[in-house]
Amino acid sequence: MKRRRWLASAGALGLMSSAAGRAAAQAATGRVVLGFAPGGSVDALARMTADALGAGGGRTYVVENRTGAGGRLALDLVKAAPPDGDTLLVAPQGPMTLFTHVFKKQLKYDPARDFSPVTRLAVGDFALTVGPLSGAKDLAGFRQWLKTAGAKATYGSPGAGTLPHFIGVSMAQKFGIEMTHVPYPGSAKSMIDLAGGNVASTLSPVTEALELHKAGKVRIVATSGAVRSPFTPDVPTFKEQGIDLEVPLWFAVYGPARIPAATVDRLRAAIDRALATPEAAERLAKLGLAAAPLAPAQMEALRQRESAMWGPIVAASGFTPND
Image (cartoon, rainbow, N blue to C red; front, side):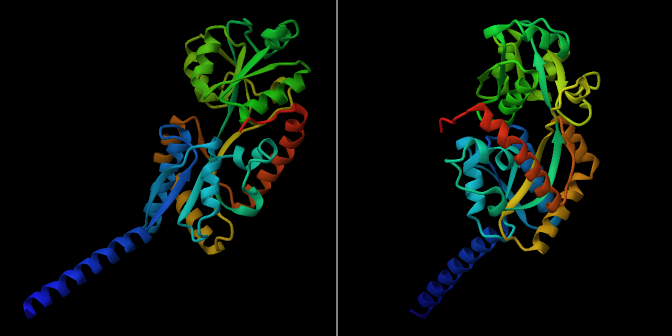
């Protein structure tokens, strides 16, 4: 009888120990959340971030793809998380700079109030790419063609309400020419239609158009950064060609609001240290990006500048989201 009681007690202690071990393991695991499916650029950046944090702090971070509502579900999740640095967000700039103007009624978060910026990860460029419908060889030729193109004056983007959509709105305003936006579910289909002559132009990250550009099936005629893209050094920027349009693509890491400054500093140091390695540079280059860390205060200043820029552009477009 005593032996049975001892075995029962030992079993109970074992179960308690096992449960405690699982709880400790869960407590030692952080999350890097993103609002996109596996396989894309944001997913790759989230995995780089998780690796950097794991190497820098002795804690495992797992990547959680929380897709839906154009990436907004991921922001809602991170907003509601405890401000302890265990739940972080990796996102492009759109949800923080553009969405407040586009999805006013749908947003459940305030970028300035509900998140703690940690560091910027990387920068890249958007590209204006033209196809055989216009026959243009450069931006000047495309603008000239647009003047008489009528209903053919179109541009595709990876979706309504995205940054490329409103870069196109801004571009058309600066051209002084009405253009029709054609939204696609991502860039791949828009490139097929561009090469096939079904749409006159597209706006997308440079790397989405690069393969067809090199094959001579489409032509990148302008890029959106402050300087030329290293992937298309022969292609001038919009600004070089007299169009006051500068919108670099960037990605950053955020946490919930009110993360202690010491925790932000620790997280930022681990990520920035990893970004400075040759391995990170190689991985980013494959995505068409370059490391570009920024301090939290600089990130917030950048967010405010871009948000102020997009407000009147979105308002003038009259765009109303469906979701």
